[in-house]
Amino acid sequence: MPGESERRQLDELGYLVLPGFVPSPMLAELRERVEMLWAQEGSEAGSEFRHEPGARRLANLVDKGAIFADIVAMPEILECIEHVIGPGYKLSSLNARSTNPNNAESQPWHADSGAIADERGYWVCNSLWMLDDFTPENGATRMVPRSHTWRRLPEAGNTGSLPGEELVTGEAGTVVVMNAHMWHGGTANRTGRCRRALHAFYTRNDKPQQQYQKGLLRPETIAALTPLQRRVLAIDDAENDRLSAATTRMSGFLK
Image (tube, helix red, strand yellow):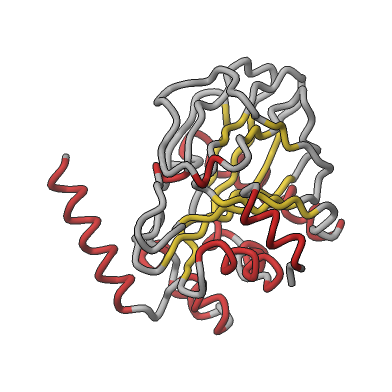
């Protein structure tokens, strides 16, 4: 459970670093599993979400291994998520991102889902799980602390330096919880090795999921979920079904 100082840091700076959160056996299993999936899915990897030049992606991970359902419902992380969003939250997506070796491109500055806090407050919160060390050379994430309070988005496509930016580094096994309204982005990987991470992204219950979990998960995956995992994934939430259907209809209209 986050203490007073941790809650204050989430409130004021917009992020919290949890070194050594992932035990070594779990870290090894996560690494092995994502590499197996990249090999199996090939050019289709990440297609449930999107492809990205200069990076490998995976999406819909809860359906691709029990360990992924475990990590999205860890109580210590969920308590941090609830502190940012409030008690009514759900998993929006669980993706993997691996920055390619010698990739000179940085991600543009962004807030996840283009989210701006509304009259109810914050509605997106992300957790970044470091599967490799994050260093200044290999594509660590940069952030602008306190930018979550500004209620505006960064300039579209901007990859340049910003005043007050900080680079978040750490050893593999570190988890970073961030208020995803905070401006952030991955940096260039100037090394000869990939830099891998998982992104467990949560949203408020009145917003649609980035990836509609109930529609993506196989029946056997749903059958194996614990009650807590079902709640986090909004499997039994009729309002979430309505939101997903409305989003699907709007997407078709816009196309």
